[in-house]
Image (cartoon, rainbow, N blue to C red; front, side, top):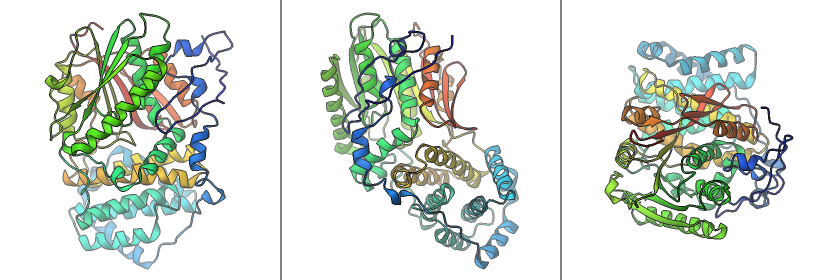
Length: 511
C-alpha cells in the first residue's frame, strides 16, 4: 500500500551535549501514525530551523564562503616528468588495476573529451597522484621523482580551496608526503592503538562542529544508528531487561533515539530497564576511560529526563585492545545486544585484531542480536599499493561528492568536515596500506567474517527498509539504499557503496 508522507520539520533543535527530539505525530493521508509504525525515527524532528546549530556556524557561512575554482595550466616541468612516469610505469601495475579504478578513469576520460576544463585538471591530478604512488613503491621506485611530483602537486592544490578533486588531491598529497618523509602513521597504530589524532590536533569545538555538520550534510551517521536501533527494538519487544555492549560508543548519540523509542512504545511490557556497557581502551590510559565516563554521565542524565530506567557500565580492554568476555557483568534474564560501529567518517580507527577479539568473544555470550555497521570500501584489487591507493582515491572522491551535494554553497562548513575527519582518515588509511605493501585489512568485510565464524544472518524487516528509504528522502537524490542477502542494508551514493548495516544472531539464539 502506497504511503504519502506529509511531514513538518519546523521544530527541531540540536543540543551540543545530547541529541533530544520531541515525539510528535506524523500522519499520512491514509490516517496512519508513522511514528507509531517506526518508533526509532521522529520524522518531524529530523530537520528544520536547528537554532543551536545555525548559531554555531553563522560566523562560517557568510557571503565569502564560496570557494573560487582556479584553473592552473600544466607547465613544462609537469610535462617532462609525466612523460617519464608513463614510460616507466610497471606493467604489473597496469595489468592489475581494480575495476573500480578503471571505471573512474573511463568516466573521467569521457568528461575530458567533452572539453570541461575542471575535469581536465582533475584528470591531470589523478595522473600525478598515480605517478607519485608508483614512484614510492613500484618496480621502478624513485624517491627523487616522487619528491618532484609532490612538489608540483602542492603547487596545484590546496585543502582549503578549489574543486572537490583539488581539495581531495591536497589531502592525498599530504599523505604521500608523509610516506616519503617517513612521518606517516605517527598517530596510527598497526596494533591496538588506533587513529585518534583528529581529536588531539583539533580543538574540541571544531570536532563538535564538524560532527554536527556531518549529520546535517549527509545520512552517514543517522543511517547506521537508525537501522541498528530499529533492529534492536524489534528483537527485544517483549523483554523487561536489555543489555547493550557497545564496542565504540563515542559520544553515545546513537542511544538517545533508542531510549525515546523504548519509553514511547505501546506494545509489550512496561518500559524495559536498559543497561549499556561501553568498552574503554586500556592502551590509551585515563583519557579514554574519562571520555567514556563522560558519555555515560550524559546518557544517564538524558535517561532520567525522559523516565527511562537505565544503568551504565564500562569494560576496559587490555592494552592491546583485546576483549575478554569474562570481564563483562552479565545478569540472568537480560536480552544481550552486541553493537559494533566501525570506521565511519567520524570514528577512530580500530585494529582488525581488536575487532576480531571482540566479535569472537561476543559469540561465546550467545547474544540475542549483533548489529554491525561498517564502511564499504569495495573489493580489494591485485595492484599492490598503487591499486589500493587508487581504490581509496575513488572511495573518498565519492564521499567528497556526496558531502558537496549536502552543502553545495557552504564551502567553509564542508571544508571543516574534510579537515577534521576525512583528511586524517586518508592519511591513516594510506599509511596502513603502505606498511602492508598493498595487502591487509583495508576493504575487507566484517560481515563476511561474522558469517565465516558461525553467526547467523537475521532478516531486515520491511519497516526497517522503509525507514532507511524515508531517511534518504530527506537528503540529496544521489543517495540510495539497497538490500543485500536479506540481512544487510547498504547506503550508496550514485553507483558507489559507502557503508552498510547488517543484522546477525548467534547460532544458539531463539530468534
